[in-house]
Amino acid sequence: MKDPNPRVARQGLKQLERRRIEVVLRRLEEECRCLNRPYLKWTREQRPWVTLQGGGDPRRTAGGARRRCALVSSELSRLEAHRMRDVSDAILVGASTVRLDDPALTTRLPTGKGTDPKRVISTGG
Image (tube, rainbow, N blue to C red; front, side, top):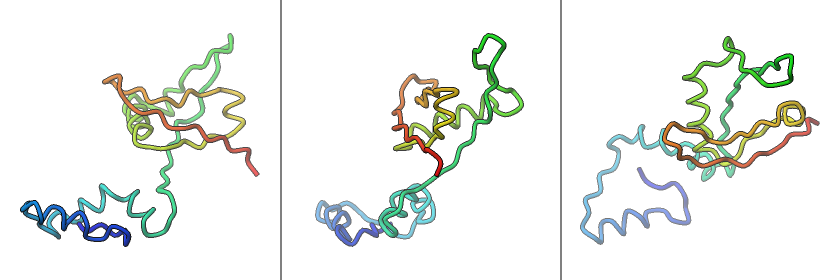
């Protein structure tokens, strides 16, 4: 797909063509747009791509330790949450959640690799 950013429009295509690399446009264009949705949103609207992930309400045991509520979150949904963290720049979390649970919000993928997003705390208002 063509880069919609007017500051670099067609420069990448021109570089590839100069190096005699075949450029095919409009093949798998929908898939390209899907992969590039966050970049396209920022380029066109100067607004971030926002996703929502809700893990539920962790419950506390009598001793105060956290335990996950099995009805709210599954192993598969937790894995997807960590995948989402790995590709996100920041996570917005409520101040009351930080006070009550102090969530780590780190990326914990099975490979042991991943990028941790910044934690942004909302005070509500």
